[in-house]
Length: 322
Image (tube, rainbow, N blue to C red; front, side, top):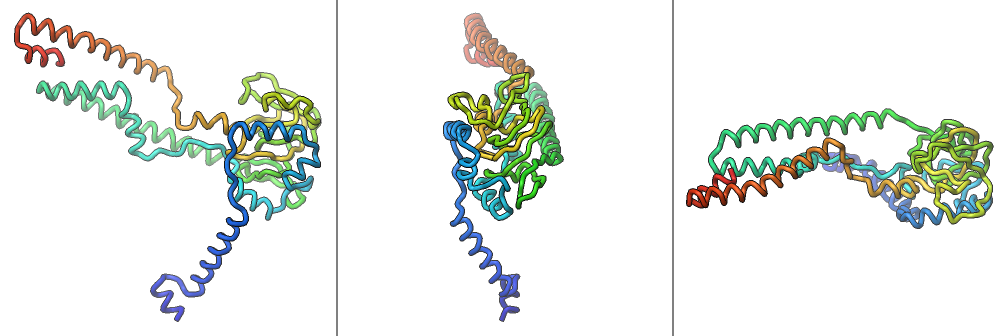
């Protein structure tokens, strides 16, 4: 019988039963451990301020961890609940989206207008030359943008950043993407802060926060309770934020937030999908608007002068738009 089912379904009956059992287990797991909802900026800020006033014991109690860190089972559950420890980023556009992005800009619209007018006035030579210019420009820019994105993706894939955490009671190097809330991390000079971390032990710890605040000098951090938590998260003395790095000293910390729930992610959300405007882009835009203003002035002027002097308003209209 299993041979018959295997023939019709591509798998043996035993394999189908195993697949069904795996599906049931996954469904039960997801029901027992639902994914956490992302927090907004105010919730994240309030969490950081609150954790800065808690004792080490209170932090361990709230995050359901201890000084020996998480075990593999707890880490697996938390990875499922909180997701990967990565910031939101711009997803790769489809080829037609990239093409549309290139086409929809003032200069291209101006060129299309000129091509349309040239066809309307039967100036096929001009329309062909401009169409050829637009096509070549379109192909070159499309290739450049696609190539630039692919190269950036290759570089990102080559970078494997790790952090030292305690898993199963032992120190272990873990990929940054696998860090979970409740992980106990060890930080020393040169380390990147892997998530939003509450320091519980420290010695001569200085952190470079220039990426977040623009400060050129490193700031001192420690593990003491914060007396004045009503400050910017970067100014909390016992909190280290993802995106910063250890300049000198040593620390042990407990991960509070990861990935989309980190403070840095709230700052980058508004930038996702927005391409920075370069000096070249500004120049092209200014030139385009200058040409549009010039056309807006010259077309009516030429139309009126030609119509008044020659008396043929239709020919004057064609002459004006050409």
